[in-house]
Image (cartoon, rainbow, N blue to C red; front, side, top):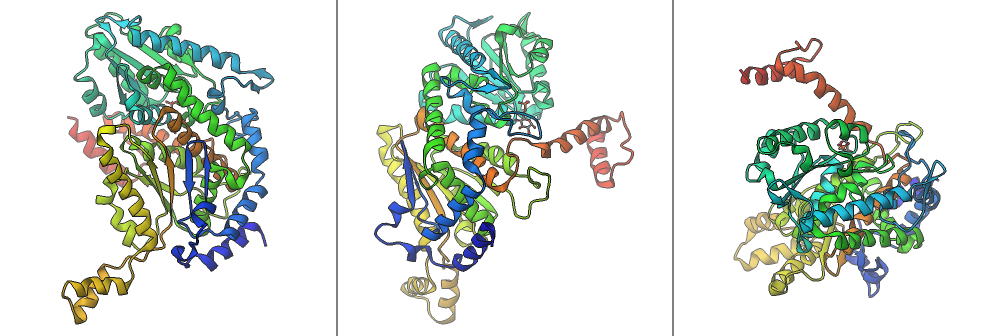
Length: 534
Ligand SMILES: O=P(O)(O)OC[C@H]1O[C@H](O)[C@H](O)[C@@H](O)[C@@H]1O
């Protein structure tokens, strides 16, 4: 029997057992792992010693250790695009790495130093706009060129002492309009962030920003910066090379905030805190490379995730940070996890015989509790939950609110596991004076099945280092899951078809093309939009 089959039959044997019954004096300790500032507790799942043993075997048999080493050493593991995968090089600045026989680190360090100088200059006022010191930075980018820095600027708000940062991503004109309307073009710096510098949303918004600035400034390009792999295209846009921060194709878009794509964050929090953010991620890299699988946080996170998705058939995964400043983490992880591991064929092009990555979603607590937790507790589908909480907040004066936040976080995982039986529900309703059939009916509504799995990641405080570690932890989790699934986690062909069709539809919406060959639904909707433009 293959390890996959063994795990599936093990899952069908143990799926129904009560998680609470697995607890003894040492379970919390045995089914958690710590590294640096992190403790990952997966004891509130139905995993036992034999489950973990089988899962670790699954990881070993997938060749994970060799594949991990291949990634870190610059082998072209993204073989549908013929590229190395080296976002880790952007945060391990001391290590030398070669691609195609050439040391890539000279250029990486040089660009990093230029970013530091530029960020310092913007923060000090040495680099200024036509109207003086830069007060606002607008990052125009989408997907990987937006979600990372936007999430990070929010996450590290307590360290933000540079100009205000704004993020424009959507091609919907409302986004750029609402962002620019209160800004002064003479003191605004526009960062055009695009790996390819061809993404239609970003290029359209960049042109809009340029036209907005041109109303007040003779040469708006002077207040523009570009972050891209294409020096040719940034030059064609009119941005002078000293304000272009380049990177190579071995940095995937959704893995790119450690380098130039993180410039807005560096300007916001300053190079020193940015360096701490890199250091936190680099420490996680080292842990990932060195720790045994049973103590390895990214490996454990991946194995627990796969246990729930591939073996217990729970199709979604809720990310629930009890940390308001991580409110963009679920959106960031949607791209990281679903673009990376939402694939249908193996590396060899064979259709997968099992499910690939889960649907990832979430909201920060406690907000989610007042919205969708009803389904998590009593719905008919089981949703594994991933809770996150800091031991301490950044606001000493509001420590009592942090206690309330933390109590809610712990209460939710406890409630999910413990549940409430029919007997307990009956007692509750009896105490309220119900009896007979009405008591039975009312009690049924108050039953919680319980035994719903969750994990908790706890860290001392959301500092730049801790935040860097969290993001790197999730990146490596995605890598581990991808290796075990046998897929390429680093391409994204699934986004192409929609882009092609959108290009073809544009002239249909303007009336320049008749849409021959399109289906009736698309044509009718297009016609309505076309008519509304007159
Ligand atoms: O940075 P860019 O080249 O503008 O790409 C922005 C985004 O667009 C694409 O659609 C990809 O799916 C994303 O992976 C990428 O992050």
